[in-house]
Image 1 (cartoon, rainbow, N blue to C red):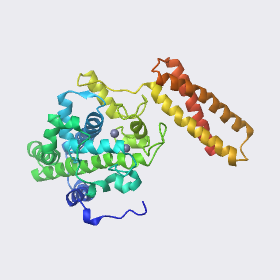
Image 2 (cartoon, rainbow, N blue to C red; image 1 turned 90 degrees about the vertical axis):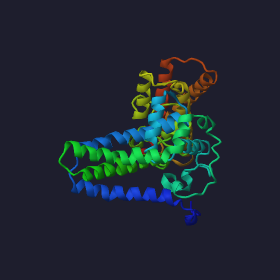
Image 3 (cartoon, protein in one colour; image 1 turned 180 degrees about the vertical axis):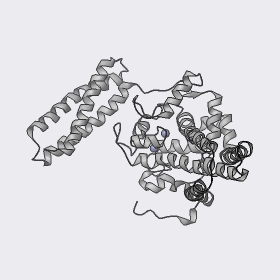
Image 4 (cartoon, rainbow, N blue to C red; image 1 turned 135 degrees about the horizontal axis):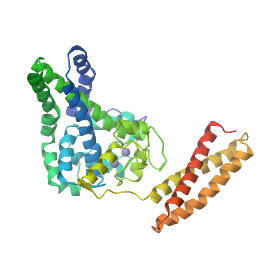
Length: 376
Ligand SMILES: [Zn+2]
Ligand SMILES: [Zn+2]
């Protein structure tokens, strides 16, 4: 965005000070404490518990449950994710969901709150630091406005965040030192606050922010190129499974983001495990045939573009590679038509046929990839 100007007169000072202040503490005071003071295992245990508890309350709760209604959950799951989601200091669930639903509806356009076309920093955290948009009308969260638990959390979110997210780790850290060690109480409290509180908040916040910035910048687009969202294993590891963002934008109501069985998606595994315990139900899955149709469509588009480019301007291309690509394209074209019919008519298709089509698609994707490196 060459004509994007920093609107200093519209800075949200409270949010900006919090984001910058916590990041500075995490980069200075937390390492100073870790280097200079003896820590107990308990302080690190709190960090190890609080990181997934708060991060997954965002991915599993705020995102997949409340924003996308991709499964149903019993009250203990809702209560846990609302309390620990508040501790991520990412605003109330209601605020988060209205922004997120707007993001999906207007992705990459001006109305998208974290529109990546306004730059990486804007999508990452800049959008939180400025008051540029009018007051939220909450017109896309009518279902949540009727949810008593969500509205309770919306009212008390800052208190919950402060008490459970920052004061509790400090109190527990101090109490552990008082009861089980000879170390000073203040030292345990400070460690709990810095490690289980502030450092943890910063780690979890940036893990979520990466979804809006890096997941719209880095990675592959196997399901759609209509939007900037991308799939990346590295991002999935950093974001508790949300890194398969290209899939997610294409099929936002699926409770899975990493849809393949081998993909790293701890949020999906947790939702599935909770369903076995009777705490979640109605897990929504997009049919395999529909997913494959999207993959095939993209593969076909890419191969055709490659073929056209080679036809136009690559005299070094051997006739053999050209012929192989044309043949693969023709074969896939026929399968694509058949699969399109299957999906449109909601017909049953055998697992074997799907596997065959999947193989064809991947063969084509790999062939196109190999041509990039070896055009002759
Ligand atoms: Zn997105
Ligand atoms: Zn989403």
